Image (cartoon, rainbow, N blue to C red; front, side, top):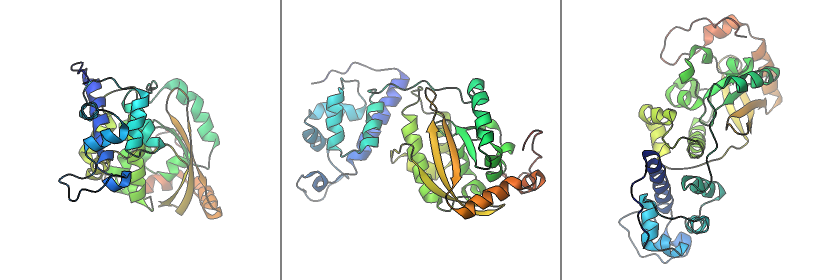
Length: 308
């Protein structure tokens, strides 16, 4: 029988709870017939039983129970992989499981406003005009952007730095969300990417933006409990600019080594979008200020000097 090593620090307790919640969410999504086990009729709780997962993984029932309960036990990479196979995890979910179990060390997280990083990236962003481009933290804090991004997401200059987060605006600001043609798909993918990113941050506590979103958005809180994970991937998103109309944009991201920041560039997916980005870039600043959406109905102020 495994030996409980006693209580851990608060950060370790949070990580273990996340691990247990993730395992339970994946166990509850499987039916016996999904894994080749005979169905035993109606069950009081959804999914597989812990005993069944333990048998499939070739581990002790007590060991697996304690793993899911967040107790401090010895966990090897080999046994953890067996648990992943038993739960039919895909590669992204398996990597997430390893990170939660401490099998992959979390990279150091750079400050969101690192002046050295910003000074190196801003000229690159500016050269990418008229393509919208920004620098984000793994949890969607927008820390730098170019003129095209500012004109696509009018009003971002009016937000305090603490609110310049794509997820926060998407889930709490209807005018930001309304720019997306398929917001339900965007919501699901965004939360799944945040869930994956949260397990790689240096902090063991829940990041502040996630705490805030769980309090301010019922939709985010519901999606967060699903424990879906998604890594960075290329995709085309359909946006509606209040200034130039429909846009089909290819989102291409590159992760900055050692920081986790990502440089995201939005390139036109069709010729119409290419022309509309050029049109957006040519619009006068006064028009942008007049049309800038604000989250709570306040009157927009003029852009700070130097805004392009």
